[in-house]
Amino acid sequence: MVKISDFQTKDVINVSDGRKLGNIGDIDINLMNGKIEAIIISGPGKVLGFFGKEDEVVIPWKNIVKVGEDVVLVRIQQVIQ
Image (cartoon, rainbow, N blue to C red; front, side, top):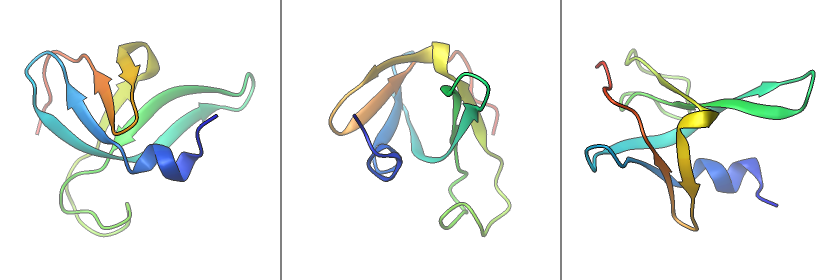
């Protein structure tokens, strides 16, 4: 089991290009089945997901390769900034 607060402290790394995308700012949960649909990476200007105007990156759960102790590995082709 992983707490959401522990999940949010992990760095998110794109295995397609090795770039650090940031940290998880929010999680999209399907309330009908209780499954995580996507993770949302806050833009660099945001503080605790509230302040700042940077865009968010939404990564569908199917694109998560591995959840490790310190990182979440994802595979996405291109991040629009």
